[in-house]
Length: 179
Image (cartoon, rainbow, N blue to C red):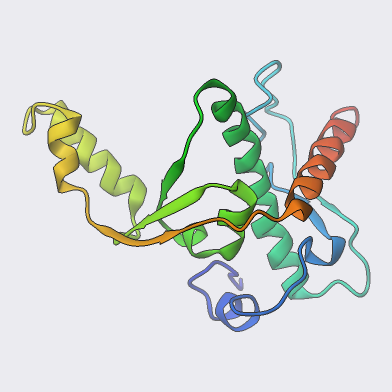
């Protein structure tokens, strides 16, 4: 199986640094591989499934990879919009492969702080565990161990992503009736 994640040769040679128009040549990917939990909390949708929209014979491998990256980012944006309605977020701390994507910062429309670690989930769990076992008295104390920032990326608001988000939401709602 060929992988297209940010560490793969396929991703690095075909996606990064390439001038790909917003919207992956109109290919849209809904990334609900195991259902969807947020922001559709009114009915928690364990049956939601992924969908490719606007595929054609002209769609390229790069279009599909880009659509996956945009689809995941749009899904995160939907959840972030719910959080922002409750308590506005000025910045997000991110790690891992998705943090390397130039898409995230613009779709999420938030400042991204990238840490020097790639294993954010394991690192965060270890920090929480240190508080849990009493090695540190509080989260404030253990946060002194957080690795310094590798980079801070500021968004460049792109209205096309707001339009893509509206399309994404409409497609999700339209597909609900087909399950």
